[in-house]
Image (cartoon, rainbow, N blue to C red; front, side, top):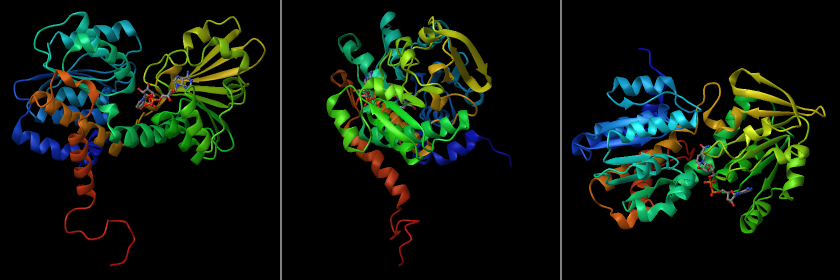
Length: 396
Ligand SMILES: NC(=O)c1ccc[n+]([C@@H]2O[C@H](COP(=O)([O-])OP(=O)(O)OC[C@H]3O[C@@H](n4cnc5c(N)ncnc54)[C@H](O)[C@@H]3O)[C@@H](O)[C@H]2O)c1
């Protein structure tokens, strides 16, 4: 029997599989519409189909640049309404968001705050609340609490999401993507990571594990101290830029690297962004700079920029999140996403059942949901009656 990558991912999303079986019986979303604005790729297929099994009608669109055609095809085959295809255009993306909201979803599953922000532009009655996946979305939605006034649970602020996905999985997938995109060695290269939050820590540690010499630039002094004590170089920003062969931004902030930094860049440096929005590296500003004499675009979303003084700067995925771009993008590991999406499914269930109210507007995942998801994951690894963890190598 032939099977697809989406089947492979679905098979290894073990938490979602057991939640889907339970939802099939309990139908928490019966009669409800869920609007989703999240990357459409193999792992989100498993999440969205889990919500479908719980009785939801689902209307979905992707995020900028990350929609994968095979994921769209499968979702449509299962009766999910998918709006649009991959786009890098903000205007086209905004039109897709408006189309999702035209279905007046009862619940929203957001990634980056796009759908909730668009909802406030033209509100409708009946939105119960929902979930937000990311740091960037939380930063955008927190100041809007007075207008949103509904339960919105921020998956990113679960400790599980922080360590399983942001730290371990983003670090692994950023390294995997760099190798896949460029086919270039990391050994002995100078890698400068901007931002030492959960994601930045993972990126820094994974590149160090791949034998790069890693430097961290961090604006918060306490976090910079942490990076220093973790053994990374933390010189001032200019020195960190000037010594880098690869710069990775992962801060959640705009304009981290701009055309003003061009004089500092080393010949042959590569710029990549792992932060949610493609504004951490100001690619348009760099391309418009007077120092730029020529550009070359390679296949697979790689680009080189020639500067008038002979230096070359390489750009991966034009500043879009590079662990979800380029040839055969795999994104974060299945297990990490299964954990995060189990939190998503349980949080949406809590909002649908009225277990949380408007006092839970843009707040972390409730602790009982974290504990239940952690317990389920461990129970699957160490089933009752099995005295020794599988693979431990211990003798019985
Ligand atoms: N690529 C992925 O798969 C993926 C997954 C999860 C989150 N994200 C995104 O990654 C970004 C970072 O997430 P996080 O959870 O690590 O956030 P975080 O808030 O924990 O950490 C960001 C860090 O960047 C620092 N910072 C801010 N501006 C800076 C600057 N100009 N220079 C240097 N440091 C700066 C902050 O002080 C902070 O320590 C967000 O945009 C988030 O949405 C990406």
